[in-house]
Amino acid sequence: MTKPVALTIAGSDSGGGAGIQADIKAMEANGVFAASVIVAVTAQNTQAVTAAHDLPPDFVAAQIDAVVDDLDVAAYKTGMLSSAAIIETVAERIDARDLTPLVVDPVMISKSGFKLLQDAAIATLREALIPQATLLTPNLHEASHLTDKTVETVDDAKAVAEALHALGPKAVLVKGGHLNDTAEAVDVLYDGTCFRTFAAPRIETPNTHGTGCTYASAIAAHLAHGHDLPLAVDRAKRYVTRAIDHALPLGGGHGPTNHFFHLNAADAFE
Image (cartoon, rainbow, N blue to C red):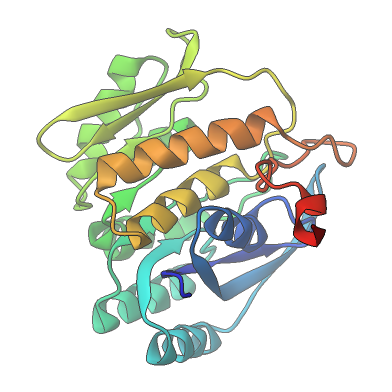
């Protein structure tokens, strides 16, 4: 027995709900073996990010090379890349090693308001990394920040998807969980030719820590399985919706999604 391999390149969340910890859980829950490259560590829980520390860019590059030199990686995902130097390093390795398909989740800010992407690094993200993406997966705040456009409706989401596609990614998925003109959580996928929308019930819960990381990682997992992009997004959307529906009320802030909602631990011993 074997599994496809997916690689996440992102920052660590000490609370375990988001970041590289969420990426690994989501990838494994969607049937792939998850490898990881840690670019930063954060002091974080369900309530706040209190500190962050970047790893040296050359060590980030060494991790990427170590994984791809040995493992047959079938899909890649980036998350928190906080500085221009780290983005440049990751983008250079992606280009040099031809690391595709690539899901770029442009993480910018935590739920508590802590900046996870330095302002000075946004231009580097636009110019060096986004053009290499198979899929760019911004939430509404990130899409607005990257385009200087207001995003409140499905039509707005389509407009920013077109604007972001002009930066060079093969496709853009605008995650519309907080659009105000629909009762459902509607995401907009644009590949330069046509729009597709993916809708699911909007779940009222404060426990949504790590949903963006989880969603993007699940998409990468299904790309690693060899699915085309619309099917990968569809399966990941259904997975993350159920993970939110079974979210865990842990801690005193935004609890995490339940990545393994479909598993009963007792089954492993029968």
